[in-house]
Length: 82
Image (tube, rainbow, N blue to C red):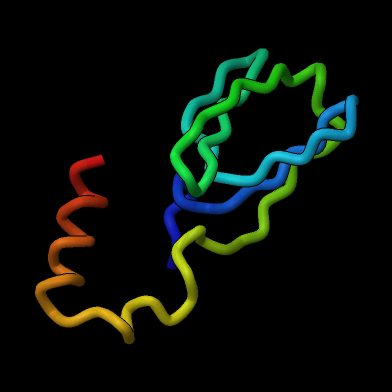
């Protein structure tokens, strides 16, 4: 199961820009999209053509198989601190 705050979204704006990432902040008039690289961009809702969720996390599929126990524990601790 994936918490909604970790779901990946794609936003397309009226000027045909496409942004992908997680929604890190929302207001009634805007959303803030945080990219996988960590940069954030505010998009006004009235500039959006579409906002769709992939239903997937940004975390790569199968990542847990490549991590040892300590690395997985470190990752979980990091995510819980956010």
